[in-house]
Length: 355
Image (cartoon, rainbow, N blue to C red; front, side, top):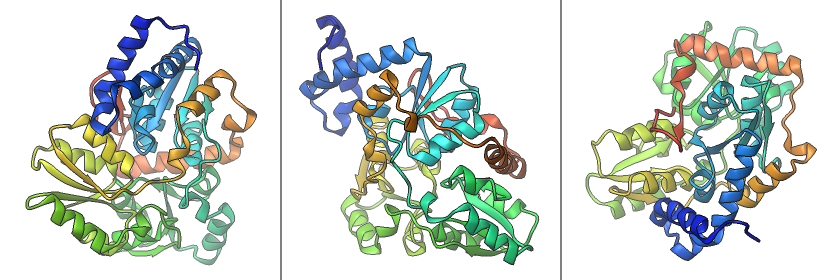
């Protein structure tokens, strides 16, 4: 792209980018090639009082090149609620932008790639939930955060991978309908005396992982490696883990100092984060990529800041939004958590805990 930036500006930006991206294989010329674009994006964000949020699974040149904060979907939505910015650019899939709008209705929420979906979110509709409730009035309905606003509005409480068990245990009924992730429901079932009925949704990234994949990577990593598995994975994969949970649980394990070698069984964006933030450790990855998350690049972020299309502006019916907000607030009530318990990493400040 044409650049109005000086050679000194480009050189400084190239060095900044390379300081991060060299750990995932980027060369100095490659960083120089995107420097005018990242400078322009950051300049536009300042001009428009926008904050850029980057989910951990998005490409590293986005979350380390232009994002103000990086973390998981709920933690980033809490940032969206608490920021004084006028505009939220959410570099993530559609349900994440919706969650930010649910929590921060006064903000303009923009999605760089509005067609970026999620197999979990798209596996269930609000009507599916209403039918189940009608047939099973004795169940508490708990939805994973990977759901649309319309589905959240029909549920009793929302949850994340980190607090799913706490929400299930605190729910008033001994019978739980957990949606939409059938794998996560199966992983929760042995942990509680409650009866958990799961839905049939699955994550296309984690569902394809097989025990032989994990075993081969563990052998390659050598003795003493910590195997970290996301609980969206099949139960037989979770059974092989030293640490099982969400991305925040993985981050805590890396920060704990107990290990120096990690086998990371989740989307490779998280592996990139670990390699960049903890270059002193050995990190092994499966090569699992979410095609939806990788739809979000610097070009899309630049375009949405320059001239957002109507389909890139997140809008939610107010009745739906209030119902979904109630489910999210109920999660915090059930787990005794407050608004500051889900803070992601700030690119402009110190590392804070993500969930």
